[in-house]
Picture (cartoon, rainbow, N blue to C red):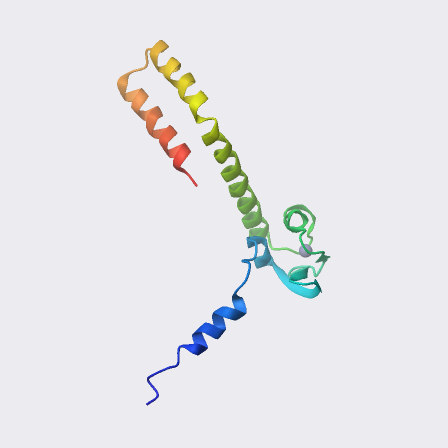
Length: 133
Ligand SMILES: [Zn+2]
């Protein structure tokens, strides 16, 4: 019977791609020579410039401002990627300060003569801002 495919083949495939997940910037770089255990040279897919392992920030910067051959849409994608990550970091910091902000907001609500609808709008906007990931 051939319809009983051994599940081993699937497992092996996963094993090849297993290990530490690569940073998203690696979508635009090729894995080059292994210079240390598990650390590879990164080669820019557009201009073939090489980067030493662990230099993902330099790789991002290269695509955003230094690469002469990279496609504009790829550049945009990397900018978006970096911005999204920074937004995540700063929103994380905001959550930690949330208690202070909460007090400031309560004061603001009480002292202001905003309409109930307007306050609800602000509430909704704030909930969205804090829940965005
Ligand atoms: Zn390049």
